Amino acid sequence: MYEDPDTRLAQLGASSLADAELLSFLLTRGGAPGEHALGTARRVLEAATDLPHLAAMGEGELIEVPGIGPVRARRVVALAALARRISERPWPRGEAYTGPRKVYESLRGRLGTERAEVFLVVLLDSRLRKLRELEVCRGGRNSVSVLPRDVLEPALREGASALVVVHNHPSGDPTPSGEDIALTHRLAAASDLLGVALHDHVIIGDGRFASLAELGHLDPVPVGLGAKA
Figure 1 (tube, rainbow, N blue to C red):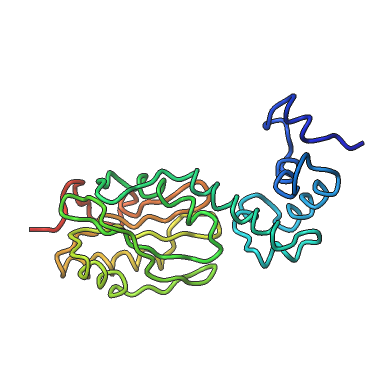
Figure 2: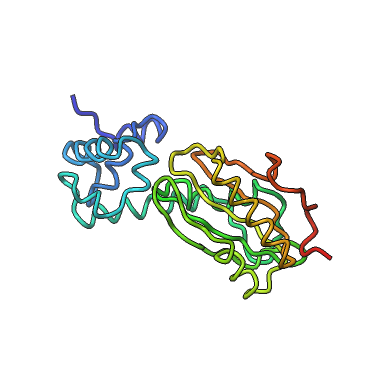
């Protein structure tokens, strides 16, 4: 028997609704969602397999689900983008770096649902205040090819004294691979030659992160110290 999600929402609150029932509100043009919208929502979730994958689906993928057209697809994409922003803690320009958790909390929404590996650099001044963050390159599901010059050219161009590099593991497991560790060592050596302090390499997974500095793969640079004397 069909139970009206709108009535249950009003009487019991949003926490009482299943994922498909919540999603059905997005798929309704006006008024309360009906059985058709609820059925479409269930097909969307079946296609996505879980909510993290739903958040990563693009408009083209969503349109392949029966009952989903461009307007409904864009609603879901917009909601996913809003949810990612809600999950993040913004790290504005001029605010100081305090450790890898700050990096994770500012980028987990953006990188946590990416299906490809994305490599970013966060540029810092001599007092470890954020200058800007830049996407350096984008790879496949299991790897991304990064050269030291990809990271250091923007650092030198922007006059950065220190930096943190960041990438994601679409598998959800942030444990660093042998390639991640080797790249970190190459970046540290190149940064040292140019007088730029590499503070950390942060890997973002599904709800968690790994810091190669905390794992002992980088010589510690005291927080508050930018370029080496």
